[in-house]
Length: 252
Image (cartoon, rainbow, N blue to C red; front, side):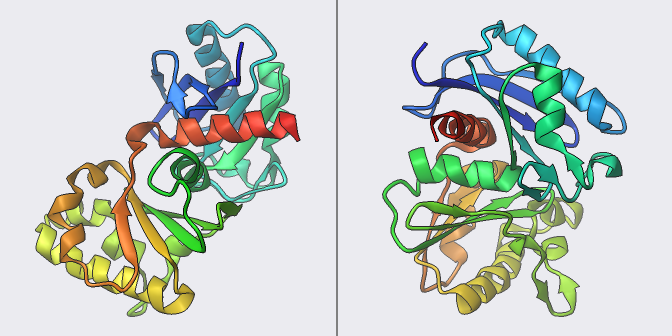
């Protein structure tokens, strides 16, 4: 079987999954996707994940399953809920998925999973010191790594700058919503990354999210002391990171 695991990426609108070679950080199956059940209730999402395993043909219980989720995750419990039911708050998500999927699972914050993929297999591989992974999308997801080790649940997308939660100004969704040019959006990103730089003095920024494929249109406009690079694992980052963590958890 090799070092294979299933990664599942739960989002507010869609849930996608694939089998991952956790040695190489590569998908070894087609990626399957279904719509997130309306309301995002725990049982409905867990059952949808079970259906995805059936679609993937993964009946072997030796395949661990990693699930990245839009919430702060602490010791297997989801402590918040973004674009899903508030019933997730305080829920033992590890236990729910273990029972529903009838196998070992491991739940991780979605930004942490994407960051883990970049650290192990992407732009952050071999990095030293403090690396900050940022995912620019509906909001701003962040993940911190020190010498390659994850510091979980960093909610730095919610930094207050100029009196507001600045992800409402600097996330990619703000650019779309306000029809901003890359030049104007980059001015907001400059404020955001400069603030992170001043507070944490990182060694590397990695920028992910769908917009990172157009990195040449905005990253060169930023003036930072810290090296800033685009992510390389793209839309599969959450799947790869969740699978890698799930496999590592059964080896511990």
